[in-house]
Length: 398
Ligand SMILES: *Cc1c(COP(=O)(O)O)cnc(C)c1O
Image (cartoon, rainbow, N blue to C red; front, side, top):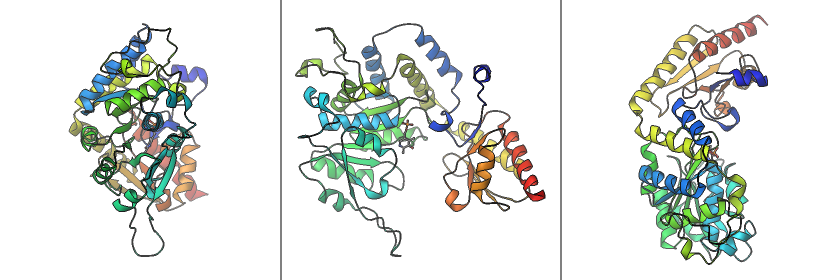
């Protein structure tokens, strides 16, 4: 299985972080890999394939339409481009130059994150509101609905919301404000699955466009994602991603996907042409989505719980490690606190050693490494336990 990587001189890693772009996503299910290989051998009309994908995404999510993108970040860029340009081919042709166009997205200051660069890449400007005050000792208030509303003006293109249980204001409040002003809500829901039911819940919230990662929980190709929502906005995003190199009269997209008759003209290649997706990604994502939506979440959780319980058991005799199993979380995990060194040092030794072991560094500021089960393969629990035992023993001698 690792033959191709051996040929390239590349070491497999123990991925205890979960699907993550810098760790090459997660291991792909064989059904998905097989479907991608099958798709790779035959040429099809890419618009027809995206239209079929749209119907499948609509069926699973309840959204009017959907598009397979090269990731959630690409979905955010295309979603912003769709909100800004609508179905105007001249505006599509101009992006990211937004002079004369509504291009501002309002966002809670506390939600600013690395991925909003994708929204700015479309030519959008982010208007931050709210004061998540962590220093005055009065408690963190975050942004309030009235502050979002007060920031709306004639240059506002939409409201950008990062979905999370802790997000304030709530998505329902954001949608109510946006729709009262005729504005779309673009949601970064990249990492909101599992549970699978979140997809429909987000669509049901009334949000206009939702970007989801295909390479995370869904288990699709690493470079895949979904942008779903209102038909007209998805059509705009599709037009700005598809290859538009059509001889006159030959652009005949399925009518339920893109209503070509309603366009003033065909746009040239748009801003999303640089993040195109191939037939293999589209097919892989669709097969993975089907499996994910039909999956037995209880059985999956039980398997993950067993992995975390095994890992905690194997680490119990390792000296100098405090263990915090978190078995009630959506994805069970094991946090560890090393006593002999800072967690950051243990992370460095794990990530730069042999075998390479990559836990989640997201709680380093609390001096914890978090081990997650979703991308572990058979043998990894033992590899992690052996390596930690060796490292912590060596450290005691040293
Ligand atoms: C992972 C992630 C993204 C990017 O998703 P890709 O599919 O890798 O492009 C965007 N936003 C958030 C909050 C994420 O967690």
